[in-house]
Image (tube, rainbow, N blue to C red; front, side):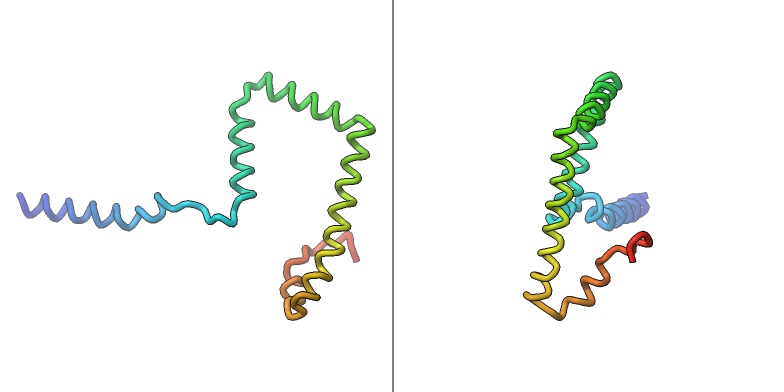
Length: 112
């Protein structure tokens, strides 16, 4: 009976040690945006249905404000300008990354 107990104990400990790295693993540090999104989802989930509805309504109303719409368009334009400057700067820093950048570019059927 003692041998059976020892065998079972060793088997359980071996299985536990195999799964320990997965259970204790932490996401890589370069995954901060995902962490931020998870935190935002958690904060959103902590709101009551009434609070969520009120926040959505206020957001929709704010997005209809001409000043907010103009600011959002300026943000979009600034992002476009940043991308237009970044790509040539990357290629200037290291021209050999051209194929990598081509792989990273999303395929968009609406753009030719």
